[in-house]
Length: 467
Figure 1 (cartoon, rainbow, N blue to C red):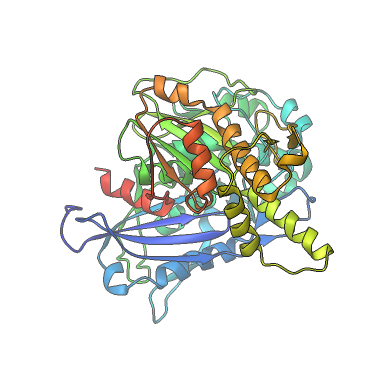
Figure 2 (cartoon, one colour):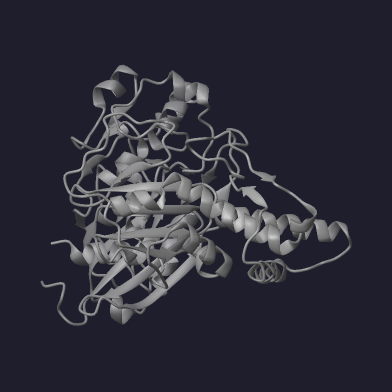
């Protein structure tokens, strides 16, 4: 069946950290004909400490089902492929024979999780530096960090080994969704997600099995790794009108899919400033990353598609820094007896900064540190009586956010790598003209705004383009 036949659709799902999004992409026009988004409200407290970040899988699955159920049934019955992306690094464990329950109803079949662990997310901080340093170094070009699937499982081995005995399968949350949809006895995982777990060699496409076995790691939990973009299987149930037997792609990384949604030319770079900030572009075919990571390097190499890598500057500081600034101003005003909505504080701060074309106030905007420099704090310098206004501070803060990102991946490096334009996206950037101005000062390449990154759209496009 040709994917270009009229009135055929691809369903794209993105299982994010705070919400789920579902889109229907019309195959012939590649247009989004409908979309649904639902907050998961899945965060739960953990018994394992304040640094732990866990989510309720049942609430996430409920959001997935709700999004799909809300899409037009007359389109869902014509879905020919399903693509699933989601939050990388995290891990959920389950009993493969009993990982879910399918139930029929008036609106069609739906599934509920059964005998699964909580999702330990990418934000989890339970793996201390001491624990990570005590582990055998992975045979990988990517550094291991807390929140990575393999690191989390090592933590359970050291601290709660009996916890692992209840399960025989593990994956990311979107790997779990694909496994359930296809009825997989052993989950499959894309190279994109495997690389985000640690202890995976992207050159040969295999887990570091010998290293892991020598460390006592329960390798039976590891999914089978397949090529990113491969078909994982077919749905073994009708699902809200989506036919039984519909092809489902192996789960993909949300970052790669977001890039795929807006990188229209191989010479494009993508700059996204949302909660955090990322700048990335695709390297030439045949490029291979260094054999071992440099923990002090500000860039990383993520597997993309068809053997191509993305060079990525992934900053932990973006719109979250501005949000913290606005929250600080709000608290100050509350202490002065004033109640001003955050939206008003934000809009007036940006307006004040637009009246100032330059400032000598300097803000080191690394409020949340960076992976390559975790102890780096924020600071304000060069303070004088003439630059203490709200406008000066907002301008300097926006400049600091952009300067931090451009220091990680300078414009000159983009140019030398053949990048011809930058696709600017992300809620913090698109809605803030001061940030746009500072981006255009720091990066002299043409910048195109308006085509926003969207992982759900990106994964649907991938499924449409796969043979």
